[in-house]
Length: 206
Image 1 (cartoon, rainbow, N blue to C red):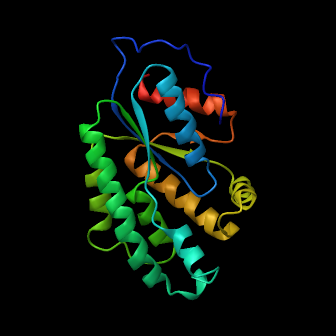
Image 2 (spheres, rainbow, N blue to C red; image 1 turned 120 degrees about the vertical axis):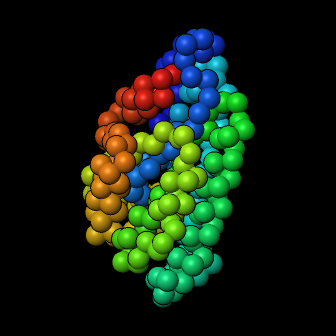
């Protein structure tokens, strides 16, 4: 999604929202980071103040640190490392969205850790979903959806980590379940990049 200059380069109209937070969710390989980068660049080109925020959990760092042996670490230990990291990142994004006078485009969120825990077969715990809702604030949430086979091909092509088809399928179902429960819009991220960006901009009102 590098075609980010298809919108007129002009200041935002007075009637359009000039600030807010958009959270992009979806399974690995759904195109969240690509869309977040392209959308942030497009917003800036159109005259908006915009910043992109990643909310990682440190999974790739953990994979590199363990030299491909992450699977040998019990999932509860993995979660004990990843959840605090993701939570801190989500809190920072929430605080930034409250003070920044422009758009914050959030790649992932604490809800991603909720999905990961459920796919791993771990209990939500008494606080995780409530915390995720709390640090979401007034952000708008969009779920990017693709066929798991497409997602798997994308993950393999980038060569930064590994996922299984079964994991991606389970992750997709959980994101769609959350979207239905919370009323979040779902966008077909297999569409042309320009179409995906147009739909995101429409949802933002920009």
